[in-house]
Amino acid sequence: MIPGCTQLLLVEPRTNEFIPLEVNDVQLRDENFLLRFNGITAPEPLKRYGGWNIARPVQIGSLPRDEGEIYYFELEGMEVRSPAGKVLGTVRAVLETPAHVLLEIDAPKSPLIPFTRQHVPDVNLEEGWLITSYPLGEQEVVE
Image (tube, rainbow, N blue to C red; front, side, top):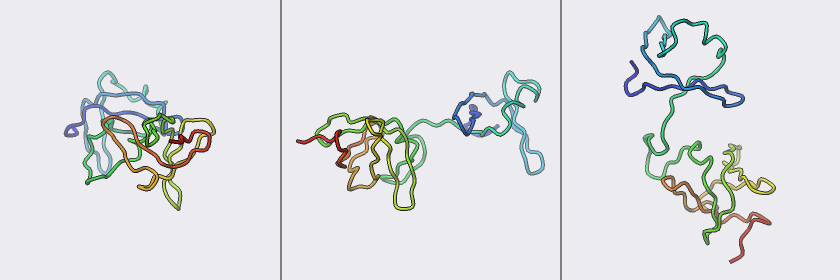
């Protein structure tokens, strides 16, 4: 058995469709491993999932991290607020570019915010929000 891991996900990489599976047993075979899942007694039902990824679900905040470290996947779905607390939208996606990381916001015109301390000075993972001082055009709040 994988220590501390009884649940895995099969994830379709293009659509992010997933199915949860409960691990029953793990066996090492040469340089590979064989997983057995509860309720599946033959390989044929799993053939349609060829090319899908295996992932381990984790809760936000449960991964080891250094002080102030944030995993990008934790930002998706977070509420985006102005410094005055007005909700501007939510983080739709995290985009890595050669210059820096951008947050795509689910708001009119899908604005992009540079994920830097200057433009995103506060992130609260536990409560699921972040503050941005980046001007968002029509979304910008004038205080």
